[in-house]
Image 1: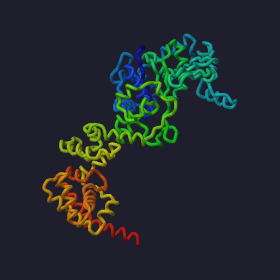
Image 2: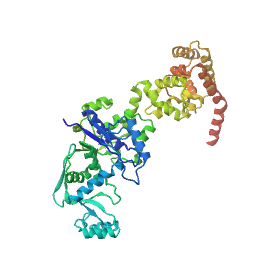
Image 3: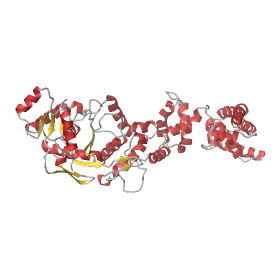
Image 4: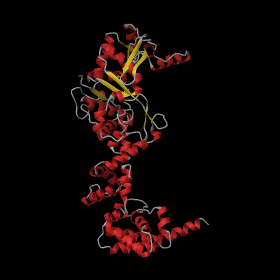
Length: 501
């Protein structure tokens, strides 16, 4: 059996887009499923747009997703270097070989001349391709053009007739007429290779057996096949995965919200959830399960279950999936994940104390079923770490604005002070008994207490919440709420009433 070698070859011109991450993931899954090799190669020959910051960000995002590479930056490999900017001599050598055998030629046309050709073609109703005006220059012509200071590019000599066939593992047989391809540039005048040329040289040099990439690259494939043939290289297998669209079926872009892996990471999505979600964009397992551990995805992944039709990036579904992971992953793992977010928001210091970590663990256990992202989880545990919260307006109107609110809070405060064992069972029994004594429903004590202790009208069980906060903190917060009801709220209500007159 042939050993599978696949690659992910991003251009470092920005953050890793979720579409690129899905491509990387599919290649990684195929390599892991087959026991093959996953190569990371950085295609950084766009000197104007490529940056080291983008390289670092791509590597960081892939590492965060858990898509480890077997060869590439930071770890090396026998087919390196894995940056195209460090492989320029390969492109120059092979371009000269193509020129020597007559498969490529030097083109001295200026940008102005090329634009004039395109304009002429448009006026005549022809496709604006290169006409081949430098195809048959004599040596004397080349010497004269070079003497005039013209810097040539290298173009591949494309057959004017016939067709080039792509046998795609996903899309089947796709045919391209050669007469629409024109003699395309493979080496620019500054010595930099074009995309189609460089990736062919490198994929062959790195023994890549399968090229799995986005559907938009399908139109590049016939040009690459012509290069493989001109160079005498064996063709790899091609597989073009479906596009990722926004819910409105348009191309996914920033106007639809977050589009990069880094953005989702910073918004509190878990890497396991994002990988699970991306794996189902264009690929389907045999069953109907959607929440799938990575080892199962690896075991079931196959190219024949990749769809031809576009996949829709539904953030609502990703968020639902993320919430499931927050609920179901081991508690210690979620605590580790949410800790940096708690530190970012200032609820925990840069070096968390054992007491802070214990409180975080207990509060996350109590509340994590109410959060779908780590940012939401920070919000739902925040009141355990700070009493400087605002009381929800709807709760104030319902539970604090009535004439008897202060009496209720005083009653609760006395109750909290008097309970012997400060645990949820004892608290609940005492609350229910006191409510019965006062001729009230338990909810008439419970809801104002919750609002006083958390600033919210909903949350985990009140008595679990109270036990975790402890008696002293509950008393501090009840006193704060009482002061609000007695001193601040009347002035607010009066101002509001005056404003409606």
